[in-house]
Image (cartoon, rainbow, N blue to C red; front, side):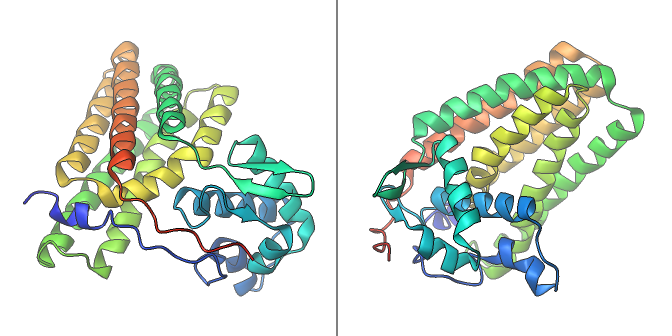
Length: 280
């Protein structure tokens, strides 16, 4: 049956909040290479890593995040942890109260749907502007990335079909490749808009929600849904090649907002995570 593998991968495996190599990878990788992260990079990686674990359910709604435990988990001092929690509170992912610390507040499906709606409007606007400003070289690169996205989907399909439609570790690499190429596709377009303020807002929306949600929902996509995503990209590329700004804006807005509708539906159907492990 179409999509049986994709559905089987939507069963989330609960991972305890105890420190692991995976949970600290984005922060510790530089240290492993013998390089120290500067303060700004450390803080950004810390915010992104904690946010990702809120989205994937490792840090569950209602769970308390204690500064001392996070500092130990990520092998940092409490100073960057304190600032990371402040930024996460601004993003609406935690709430902090005096003498009670930080508590996880996961975004609702309504929040996520609103984020995708806004992204659709803003990326549509950016695409309309990019039609005017994008160079021929960047258009060629956009076509190449679109082809690489399609190749990644085919590689993923072939990998899971070879495994008889069952979960297999070999699927991890083509999944990561598709996510990376999808992000590059969008970044090429809004980066060519010529509007730094608009680009910054879209990047922040990607960091806050989309990247984490995409990493989760790519596992739950039906094969037909991934091919529809590629078809959407093709329509955007064709409109941009034709220098049709109105068509390009419409294609991008439709793509992002339909993707948002899929994400919301997937999250609503996803089985609930097991109860979170109590915070230390």
